Length: 295
Image 1 (tube, helix red, strand yellow):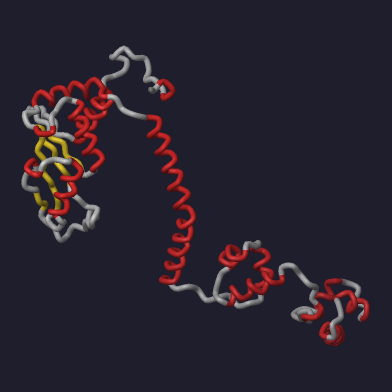
Image 2 (cartoon, rainbow, N blue to C red):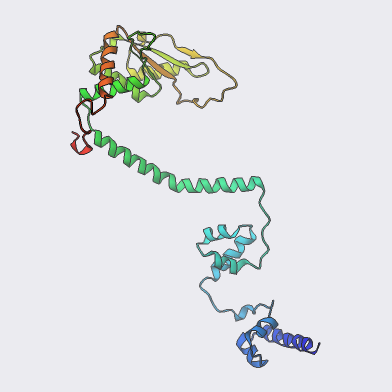
């Protein structure tokens, strides 16, 4: 009991000296305290007076950290905002009450805001990288000659065009796609194959809720064809249960190109595609030439 009373008296004296502006070392000497543990115990919970604080280069950051903590930010957010270590933030704000947990809606909002900030910086960087790679690849290909156009066009047709079935042979050339660039290339392919533009007919296939007339004008501009070459559009019926993504001003439907009297052309395409896809070993080539040999 005597020891407890002595400790209480020592603590009162230490706190009084602390409030008088004495340093830890001065209190230790004045009260003849021999250990740091005892000094810590008698001063526990008693902060130094503000006028005893030494100037610190991070005092402004400490004040900002405390202000952000009082606004409800967590340690990670304060670290990101101030660019300091998490241990420093903990030291500066650990005496403040923990902010209440965020609601589900607020958490989603903060997460979405963080994603938007990230892509605002990262998006242009990645777009620049994509454009650089695409430009380098385009330069690698260069200008195509007629032979290369025939090879690429035959493969494109074999992917997107109408082909014979084992149970039905029609030898008909019909190509359909929604990409105006690919449509222009197919027309260029037909030109390289000796097909006259007058021997083509076109048909728009589009959803009935779209602007059919605007789409028809769009494809007329792409093909530079005469309006009489366009047949009546084929409209797809609307299904209310379907959530469509291909809507808006950029939706122009698909364009189908039919070659009149195209049986001979179909057989040539069949041969070109077969030759392009033939096994290299069977064709007598040991390997495909690398980019350094391209002209």
